[in-house]
Structures are given as C-alpha cells and as structure tokens.
Image (cartoon, rainbow, N blue to C red; front, side, top):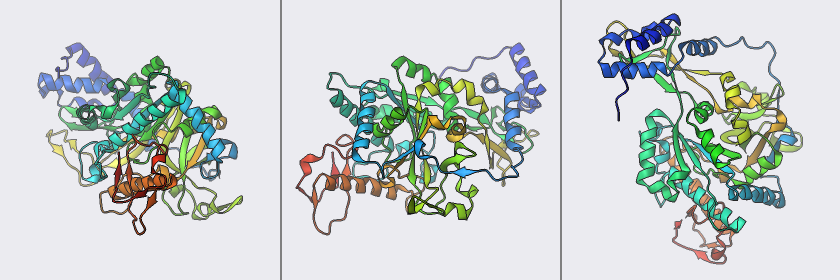
Length: 487
C-alpha cells in the first residue's frame, strides 16, 4: 500500500489553524515529534473531518432539547400504510410476487447489505457475515445470502422467459475493521458463485470519539480515536462511496437494505419489492408481530402523526398491553422493527438534501486515549467519552405518510437474528441453525413430503434449490429419512 503523501508546511499550518480556531487544537499536540509517515497519516485523517461540524453535532447530541411537557401522541400506522402476510390472501401475495419478480427480471432491483459488525459477542474477530452457524453445509451467513440472490436471478430469468440472466447487484457495506477481511472472504470463496462485478464492497464512514467535555480524543500520538457512524451512516456512505452513481448507471429503481445477522432474510424479496412498488412509496419496512407486551423491541408506528421507531422503554406498560379493537387478543402496538427496508432510488438520490438534518445519538463508552502530557495510551476504567452514531430509521419522520409503507411478515419465516454466543438460548448460533432447519422441513411438508413418525429434526434446504419453498414438487409423497441437507 502506497504511503500517504507528506503535506506541505502551508497545508499543515492551515489545517492546524482550522482545528485551533474550533477549540480542537489538542489533536496536534504531538505532531512535531512524529515521523514523516506518521505526520502524513495524521494529517490525512484530520483533513477528512470538519472540526466545526464535529463540534456542532457533538454539542447537539450532548445537550438534547428539553423534553416536551406533553407526551408524544402514539398511534399504530393506518391501514393505508400497512399490509400483512398473516392476513393477506394468496392472490394478493401472488400479485406482489409477480410484480417484484418482473422488476428483478428487468434489472431494476439492487440490494444493500449492512455488514459492518464483527462477531465479537460470538467469540470471533471476523466480520459477522463470515460466521458459520453450524448448518450441515457449514455455509456462512454471506454464502446463504449470496445463494438466495443467485436463486432469485434464476427465478426471474424463468419469469421473463428471455435469454440472459438478470443481475441483482449486491452492495456490501463494511466498516474500517471489517473491509479487508470481507473482501478477502469473498475472493477466497469466488464470490459464492455470483459475478464479481455484481458484488460491490464499500465502507461506511467514521466519526471522532469525543471526551465528556467535548474534545476530540487521540487514540495515540499519531491517530484520532474514531468509531463507525452507526447504521444510519448508510446514507452518506451511499453518496461518498459512489454507490448511487453505480446504481444510476445500472438503471436501478428499487433497493432492498437489511442487516447481515438475520439468517432467514429474504434478500430482494419479490413480495416486498412488489408491494412497495405497487404502493409507489419511497420507504418501506418489514416488521414481525411482537411476541408479547413486554418483548424489548423497537416498534414502528406514528409518533405525532409521522412514521417513526419508538423504543420499548419509551412506551408505558399499559399502552404496550393495549389490544387491537379489531382483533381481540392481538396487541395494538405490535409492529416490531427488524431493520429490513425498501427504498425507491428516486428517494435515495435526494440524500444530500436531508442527510445533514438527521440527528446523532450518543453512546457513552470507555475509550482508550493518549494522555496529552505523556503521550501514553490510557485505558479508562469507566466511560470517559462518547461515540456518535446515526440510526437508519432516523429518516422515517422526514417522509410523508403517503410515501411510507409497512409489511408485517411471519417471524418464523423471515427473522432469526444472530446476536449472542452459542449456548445463550436466544438469538444465538443454535437458534439460527434451528430456524433454518425448521423452515426447510416446513417447506418439504408443504410440498407433500412425509417424515417418519417420531422424526423431529429439520432439513437444510440449499437456497440454490429453493428461495422460499418453491421447486420441491419432486418430494411430494416421498418419505424423508436420515436426510439433514438438500443441495
């Protein structure tokens, strides 16, 4: 890798003045004592930030507006802005499926994967998408999702009955610590059978870590302490990494975005794409039905008349337990957020117009920092600063209700997140494995396959064989014995 160019004395003086005038001159404390390579690295890093902007967003996050005297008005989304797979008839779902599949066949659909996280809580330093959840095939999350795209391209090709395969470009957003490992993993595995040209790996941005008194922290003498800017950083990253330019060149009109840790995700789901396209919305979101009133999940609803996500801690217990008057026994506020979204490309093109208005949230952390007297790195025993981040759903309130749609899907078919280490019993590799295997068994039984009495195990059905249960007719009437995997 080529060394960073050494800045001229004039460039250093100009940048130093910029930071000093913003009250952040401490970042140059050790500059004169650094080697020329270290100076070049620090200069490049500091030149990538605007200290006045950092001051502005840090001050706004640290001194939030005083809470309103009146509680916000919370209402479920109106029927006009929501649909449910649990309640919709087959004809309607088939219409959405065909509409979405035609858009894929016409090369109008792209996918953005938020894959910046490491598997730290899983006992791995590798990107979470590289994780093997213990399936008989030992496929990683990345491979499972890549094969769903490959299968969908086959189905779309059959749908349009033309030569040549449609292409669903896959934009994989990483973070600084995971980018190279992600690129290497895809290359080593030959992009899991996809065309390398349709897999575009890019990196989300970072923001400096800030001390409790508003100062940018140095991690070492020659480096600012930084952290990824949250999943809401997706918007600026799509612009800065020229992803939107690539989408425009390809003629993309519809975009599906999701998180890597959901092993059941229906990548570029034609039903979801078709529904959102038929509603002509700019943002769509999938939800699952909240299990019970106390499940700790964020909810998608109307807050003061605007689409929003409200955390469970912000809702009174009595309100959380209210039942839907139209459906006794079903919660009124039940739309659990699973970070699974649709965007029209026309809306994403407007990112530069509104991205600067999205709020930043603070996470108080123990942040290693360089002591400004000695230069030694100190590892604090208690939180000494904040990391600034944005949330992907912060954009929801900016949308007119008529341009927002919500689709409720079956949890057992579409949502099984990987959050915890094996053995936890909840959202861990064992539950992920179980949920994929159980789904495969349901698909086979629906196709008419018979399982021997007393056999309770599931079956891993390769995404290359079936995207959502189709293509299994050959198993009708057959007894499935001693099979744990269908490729």
